[in-house]
Length: 382
Image 1 (tube, rainbow, N blue to C red):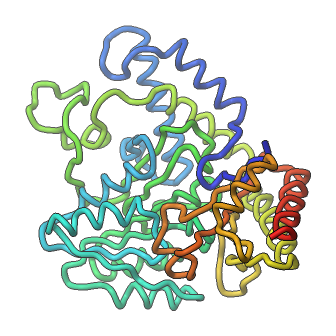
Image 2: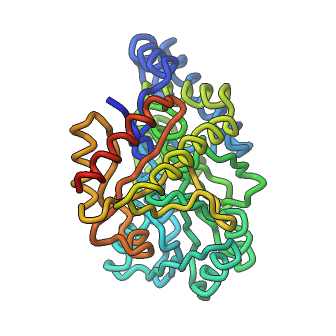
């Protein structure tokens, strides 16, 4: 199989990740922080080691403020619902994944808050102005994706964080498509809360994610109980990470995530981005000359920045038809709405969806040739 569905989940995983998961399953089988025996201590040390690695990777400076979740969606729910207060208002971008819009809409339907999507522009200044126009006196937070999971457009997180702070409100970043691909310093960026998956650009196993807390604002809990310590208290502990981590942690997954982060650090975020963008630009350039192919991502734009992914359609075909045709040729892509209907409305593709291509560090030149040959043939026959 030729795999270009890395924006959903990277595949394959580095050998070190697979070895780390096996090690955890065989050597770290006890509950971390819930026993006084050797294996429980070893599991707890492993978990803390991965917290430290992630804190260093994202320049957070506080391992205890790395909250493990099962995915980026859970982390976003923790933040959004943890910040929500009756009568408040949220602002997000018009490119958001439904991991942001569905929690917001749920809160709206329950009468808790309102929300609106700011219009993004061709320049950072236009995007910041779009967010500025949406801010109200009761705005509780600005929430923004690091890059569109459909079109790859990267948004100016640092400038939006500065805008939020100028209004005295927290800034939340969804790093689903940028963690491990675009460099980020939590302390320098001004991001208050960042949500990231472990299974995409960090090359960890599925079922891993994190919330990075860089704020004195304390989040209300989404779940309570099962922290393994402070057991005499009837209320949830105040301290991170226990406050937001209820129940037994995914020790094998987190151990694998630690190995994934170390593999990314060894390779270098800058090198990974450069290599993946070279493939993405080559694919975009080739598809731009194919009759019947419509590209939606201009990776050569002088005013916009992108994560290494792109979307296209073949005229006369629904995106899912194209995705199925590629699958029959052994090429794995993502087709449809990609859980991001706002982005498709912004780009005018809500009726057909798009076909998304995303390379990884394991992509080879022959993979790109096979992908392009398959698209050429499908477009020719359309």
